[in-house]
Length: 226
Ligand code: IPE
Ligand code: IPE
Ligand code: MG
Image (cartoon, rainbow, N blue to C red; front, side):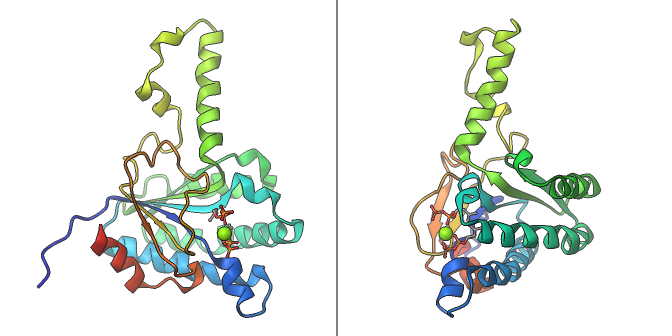
């Protein structure tokens, strides 16, 4: 029998490789994004099973707005579909849903559904599912800085009072422990403007597996290596 492993409490995931998964099959990239939905379910199921307390998924970055309009449109359609179809199930499984990122860029309909999903699931305790959408680590830090600058401008804060913990409180996920394990699928060894501040001491794990091919074995491997 293997010795018991140290288990991560907060897992952060860059779900990468959808486009390549589809291109290898000579299919449109949007098909890869649709295929990625199953992997989200696999990942969430795994985290629930393992008793992981928080899962942060990078669903759409601030830079992803620069992709071709057709691809962005397909992603928005998929996002809406997930908000309509997956939220109920997440709620049933006891997940608290939190969105992080710049919401103002999304359609009003998507923003409303985000708010509704958060309100519906706010008291759930089985797992916290943070969905990073329109998120960028640099955006996060700029946003936090602006808030503190506004306090300074209003005369409520002196610049020399600003320290790490004060800045931290203005950042996304401030109310949660930082991720202790980071996984990126798709084979690229970079962070791509995901949680920059919050990943300062996170263990990083990369796999060639493309996101739609994600399975429990891969996730188990990441946890075993942790
Ligand atoms: C990640 O897959 C999903 C999103 C960015 C929304 P990609 O679309 O980046 O797939 P690859 O990396 O091009 O294969
Ligand atoms: C990171 O993947 C963003 C998401 C998975 C949502 P990208 O595919 O957008 O990142 P780069 O372009 O490879 O750095
Ligand atoms: Mg990619």
